[in-house]
Image (tube, rainbow, N blue to C red; front, top):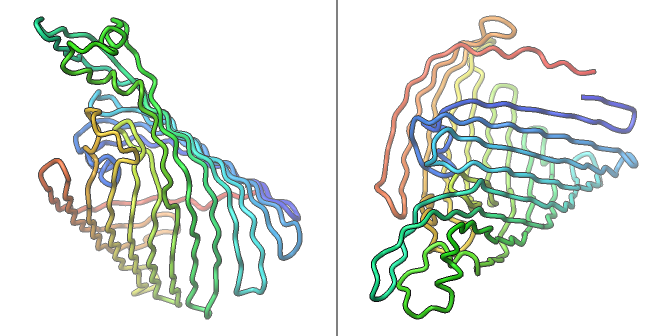
Length: 330
């Protein structure tokens, strides 16, 4: 973080190496013991034009890599510009423009073509998904009291999706316009271009007292997935924490969500696999033993309901030690 009299620049970088046993729960929904690596870069620059006017530019870049072919890696980027105006210390309004880009890795599979009067022909084909989005948002925040704050940001964006097709055998050109073929399979993707308008909004209420904190949030938007397409995501999140002693804290996190494939082309093999509703409930206790060290205990319950697969539930109990060093600012 670099801070001047009127500006602030911040650059965050993350590297995550984990397993899909938990990391895919709220996105693709495909659970297995597969290694996943994520690289993220998040620059932010803000400038105070006047005491009441502020502008902010931010970016987000992510690359996801999976060691198993059951998952599809991707690159995802987002840029946004935001303007805010403070009428009073309690009331502010916002306006934002944003754009995103999603590119999946190539997806290769063995496809079978059946012609009338001839035997089946098997060939290797592949494709990748490209989705670009642009949107606008407007909202406000209001500090109702010292403890209670409301925040709302509503908007919409348009998504354009198309496919790059890889067909080394040239089978798609042979079957195009040929009345003797029975199934073209992935060749149909070459002629598909989807566009739709989706919501992009967040509504939040926060209560923060000396020991007690409550937050209720509803959000709707899109997020990248390892199935080769973007997902429309709806979530309701409730968080509560209570400081029971100087070093102890109990908390509860409740989450409900629903995902749907953002494009309507249902012939692709992976389409609709990740359509699901999910619930997560976490109950935990943290105890600070030193300034940077915390003991943690947490119980987690999960339940998922899929459109095209069997439902699933899970329970987990976790004990651990967390180290959080003091942030460095210059």
